[in-house]
Image (cartoon, rainbow, N blue to C red; front, side, top):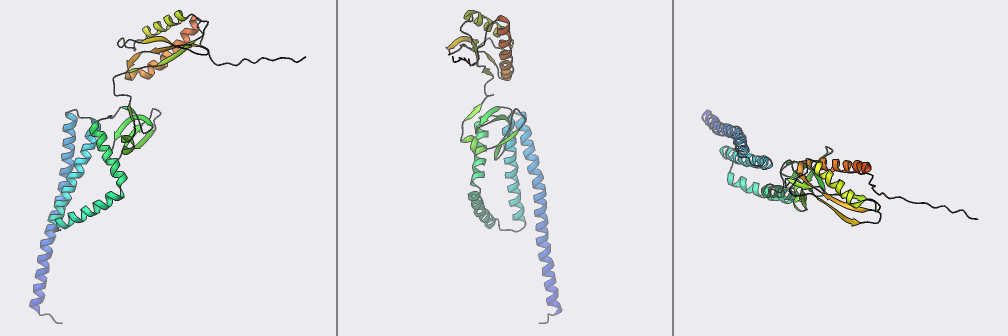
Length: 276
């Protein structure tokens, strides 16, 4: 089939008009995406700064910042696709169906996400708290979308799924400003009970990190098989717990030795009989 020059010219003009129109729309869509992404980042950063200034918990700040950024980015993508000429209604329908399929495939991940939101909103712990969750203990480094990061005292990093935390018992050691140090010391049945109690009272009184209120407890708790046991229960600031625990244990041993007070320990007596 032979095309006359006028038909060829009309086709060229129509093609140029089509490319010009859609090319301009695509170009505008790209500009919307690039600029919108920058704006989304700036808005999320500004919101983060305002929350920090308002002294919102650091864990909550980081979490909300990520949620806000991705929500704004999703809106920017939809605007850009609409400008490019894509049918947004059909796109959203397809996206919804795909989201349902992905949601079913990633139900465990979504469960972790929902648990992360609950942990942040309910405020069971915050960054810097020492906690025991899902059988693991450590200092909270961060609460992320799907998991929580713990740093252990020996500098290991533990990653715990958020759903495991929400479905288990949470122990927050740092929740209260003070803690009670629970110690047990035993003396021999032949030792002077009153003297031992006086020595323990003196050791407690000489430790400056021990709080006066609540008052510390020093009392006989048990007449055991081979020892008379004292419970020593002073209160300290949470940050001083382990320092006081270790120092008191050492000082009691050294002082008991100096005062001639014995600390019983398991021992076995072996008797040998010679047959005649």
